[in-house]
Length: 210
Image (cartoon, rainbow, N blue to C red; front, side, top):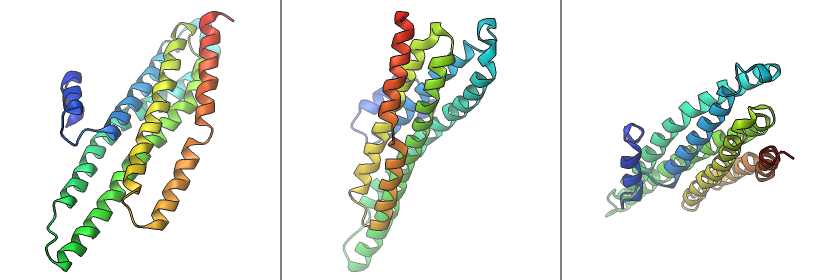
């Protein structure tokens, strides 16, 4: 499993000519890092007398950020698995019409799986972005920069995972599936760039004492 490797081992494999891990896996890891930073902001706030009035809110964020931190590495593994299925489909025989039809069916099924996983990664990253705003407003001011890094990582990972959705959609022939997926992408990304900027404005204002 890629998640059981050291950081250096993972980076070496990411940089290699092997098809996995790739951009989807990197986006899942970026999302997990964003969730971890969000949890850190919460943990540096909870239990502090100065932040007693927001402790319940921060505890709720922590509970969800920890769930996401656990889910995203699993999606990293899923992303490598489904892309391996796509590669296996390309290697199927295509000498006869029957083989061509069977190969195409396998390929289309694998491509949908390869689009579905990064879409799920994007959903999780979108949630992290949403939680960064209350964390930046209410969290320990000495950790506010971490809320900023979290939202930047989460938004980049969101966009990165959706690129992996798009590259698979380009080879999928099911127009109904494509339409439904692009609709979901639009829903997931709605307002997220603006929200990231709002979080960063809060973070910078706090850092500068404005």
